Image (cartoon, rainbow, N blue to C red):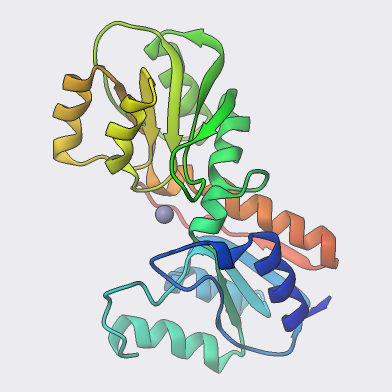
Length: 249
Ligand SMILES: [Zn+2]
């Protein structure tokens, strides 16, 4: 059990939210009751996740994709109003951690992917520490690596082969980071893994000679929020549950 204030202060500090420029506020986005005994975590603060939290009588929800994104309509109407009304009505707090959770060197999405896929981290992709570059513990063919990604993330990736070279030096960035492909090439990666892919990514990967693996936005971002949730569970002796709302993208 923790006070909401204690939980938020601790997590903000742990993830060093003040050192990030982000597209959404990090930390406490919606304030519920003062005490947190039961925490539900998920990738995205969808209505389906909120419904589970209500059912479980959770005091707080912890997510990677919260609300109030730059450029969105600020009015609390329609779908957005429905989600927020449910939270407020049930006194449930919402804590969202976006880029700070991608970048965290122990709990973050990209570090968790490295652990799961057997990648050795050598450096970061941008000035905020989001994305990593490194090597495979054991270099292998693209086919073998693709099978590993599919079985670990429980989702068949969309793969653009850019030649017949093996996977040795790899860059990776969870979520919708297809725009970092050029950066991956500049860092000498022969393979780049992210969550999503765009039409132009296909041509760029082929022309850059960098294999592209679109492993799923949701699938690549399931693990940071779980690592953070488990960390908070043990730190504050919380009742805790990770809820995986299926998302094929
Ligand atoms: Zn994301």
